[in-house]
Amino acid sequence: MDVSGTIRSILNQKSDDVFSISPDATVLKAVEMMDAKNVGALLVMDQERLVGIISERDYTRKVMLRGKRSRETKVAEIMSSDVTVTNPREPVEKCLRLMTDKHIRHLPVVEDDKVVGVISIGDLVKHVISCQSAAIAHLEHYIHGGYAG
Image 1 (cartoon, one colour):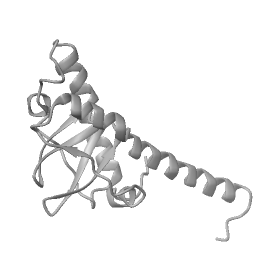
Image 2: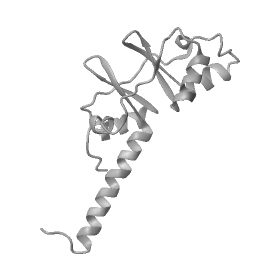
Image 3: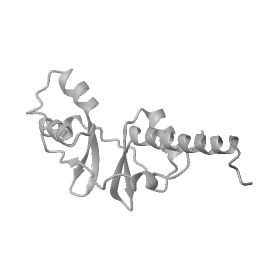
């Protein structure tokens, strides 16, 4: 599969917003923020340091299914602390493979020890579709005699 470009090219298409929450916040606050921002995950930041990620899946599996109370449970108790990250120079294809292999839906993008964005699997799928649509258009143009040589 030919998927050109780097993660930076995808970040340039998105807003600069990176939604985060403190590890000391309640899970209820995290869920409310995800709902308000229409995102499926939040980065967990201690000051400027990435310490974890919390997703809707974490909430479902670690709070709802275990009968915990979201008003009393802290984000730090359920967040995923072993966070896989990428950098803006990484090829899109490599990140797509990484996210697929590790079943990751949200991937923080870090440059010089600073979070500069978050890439979702949906962002990568949109990029792949765009690349394939461009290739199809190019081939159709060629087939119909539009290739200048």
